[in-house]
Every structure is written in C-alpha cells, then in structure tokens.
Image 1: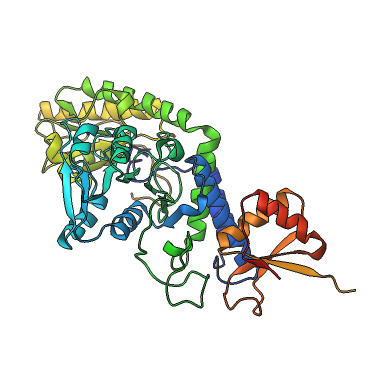
Image 2 (image 1 turned 90 degrees about the vertical axis):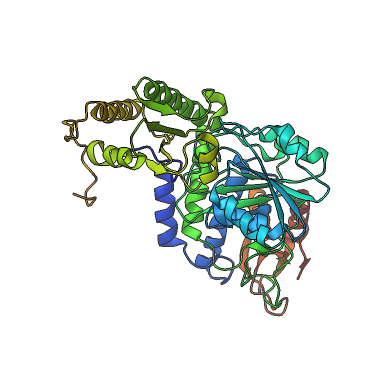
Length: 401
Length: 72
C-alpha cells in the first residue's frame, strides 16, 4: 500500500520503534512509579529515558514539565481546561482542529469568552490581528502550528512575541509539525506545547504529551494514583506527577522515546527537507491534472506536509475510495475534524482529499499517486466508470481481499 | 561485617532517576530501591549508595541541580 495519511498517523515507524516497544512490552511492562521490584524500576527508567529523549528533541530544559498523555487531544484538554476559568478570554483561530474547537466550545458554555481570529483563504494567521484581539481579560492564545487541512504554518514566533509583549501565554498545537518542523521550546519561549506521539514523532497511537513552562500553573484535570505522596488525598504539587494520574502507557511511551531518538539522529532539518521535496513534487503533479484544485499556500516554506485537493464535480469520498480500491493508495477525505478551516478555504461541507506524505514516502509513491489522480480525473471527464487496468498492489498478508 | 548504606529520598520519581543517571555517569555505585517505610509512608522510590559515597553523591547531585529531600 502507498500510505499518504501521515497527518492522521505516521506509517511505517522506524525499525527502532517496533523493537523498543516489543522489548519493553516483554521485559519492562510492570507498573512504573508503583512497585519497587526490578521490573517496575525498569519501567520507571523507560519512562524517564523517553521523557529525556523528547526533551532533547524540542530543547526543553525542564524534562519533568513534559506531561505524557494519550494523544494531542488529551494534551490540549489539559492545557485549556486546566488554565481557563469562567470570565477568562481566550484568543484562537478559525483554522483549528476539533481537538481545540470542542474543548473551547465546552469552556465557552462555562463562561470563558472565546475569540476566533479569521485566517486568510490560504490559512495564514496575521500576528498583528492576533495581538489586536488581546484584551485585559485574555488569559491565553491557543493556535495550531500548522493546519491539518492545508498545512499552512502559523508564524508562532511572531505570535508568541506579540503575546508576551502583552504578558499573555501561548498554547501551540503541534499535531502536524512535531518531529517534522523544527521547534525549539527555549528559543521560542513556548508556554505550552501539545504534541501527538503517533504522528511526526513516530510513536504508537495512544501517546502524546503536553509541555508546560514553569510560568504556567494548571489545575489537574484527571485525579488519581501517581505512586507519589500516596498519603495525600489530593494530587502532588510537583510535576510530572501532578498531571499524570493513573498507570502510564509504558510500552507506548517507550516507542515514543525511540521515535524521538530516531528523529534526533536523522535531524529534524533532514526530515523537513525530505517532506518539502515530496510536497513540491506532489503539488506540482496535482496541479498538472485537469480539473484538480489544490488548496492552501504555494509557498512550500510555509506549509507542513499536508496537501488538500478536490477534482471538479467529484465527491472527495469517491476519489478516496477509488484511490484505495483501484490503486492501493491510502488518503483521508472529508472535513478532517476541522469544519471551520474548510469554511475558510471554501471547501465546506464536502471537504477535500488530503494526501500527507511522510519521511518514508518515496518520489515513486508520489508519482503513482499523481498518476492515479490523473486517471480518476480523466475517467470523470470521459464519463467512464469502468475499473482501471492499473495493476493493484498486493496488500500485506491478512489485509482485506 | 554488614555494609552500611545511605538512602537519598527525592520529591519525585523523575528526580530519583535523574539522580541515578548523574551518579552512574560519575561512576558512583548506586541502586534504585523502594523507600524504606520508616522514612516515608509514600510508595515511591529512593537511591541507595554506600555510606562512604554519601559526600561524593551529594556533591554530584548538587552539581547536577538535583535536590534531595534528605539522607537516611
């Protein structure tokens, strides 16, 4: 299969990730932070090393302020619900994923005032407009680092500077950039960074984290056992324990740590360069297909590895189905959990076809995807609805057919 | 003769393992152990070093910015 759905979850993972998870699941999957026997201590060590590896990748000087979560959504929920109180004002954008939209909607029903700054049709957010939206009640600016629909990269450096000038902290949703676009937490002076473990960081699903700077004090949103200060009936006041109630996903976090180490070894710049190469090739090729419309900016430097397109007169769901069924190409179609972003770019309610290459995508994969889109578009033009003669790639054993 | 140990206790498990890494990096023999019950009712962990290494261990941890809650 040609996998072009890395914006949803990266695949495949580096070999070291598979090996680390397998090893930990077999040898060190006792409960970290609870018991004191050798396997539990080793599980603890696994968590510790993974936290350190993630910290190195993002240049985080205080690794204990990395809170492991089950995904970026949980990280965003902790950041938003842990900080915002009724009466607070929060500035966000209309390019956000539902992982940001929905908790903010819930909080708005609790009395938090949410202001959405409009993005341009290319999905760009103007730092001046963000700054202008700040009021004396603004407690947080919460924005995505890159649109999950069209990949447009938000100028977070300028937004953070503008926000800090007014003493307002910033929460960055790095779901589409963590691991593939350089993020230096110290240099950017990031207040909170929410990341999935299973996308650009190459960990398994069920992993993610929230970095919380020493300037931010959140209320816990999940309460329970931590293995520390067990004599108390409240959460400990130190991190990461304060926000990590319940048994952690040790094998998953081990995989996340291996993913972070792989990225550090390869270099984020090298990963970014490869993804930009794939992105250029994909966009150039798609634009040559009659009837195809590609959304978002043409400036590759301002785009994460996400490409949304439509074929005039065709339902994205039909395109996605044909790509999978006739060509063995995995993409995502629809509104990608970001309805407002589609309203911005003019593709609501049908949405788009989204192709998201990754570090393991090859130029040949891209060429075959472009060729397949060409065939589907031509079929539409010729009103031919017959199966294409292109050979169908074999699926891995045990998959379908 | 029974060997004498010192137990370093930290605020969090994270700091315990940070201390272990610092000590092992400096080739000081140490072991992560369960906190003795007479030190704390907590179900956390602690670092055990040989009694003769107490001062060295304290210095290494201090140099690494690691503060212990105490030594027993």
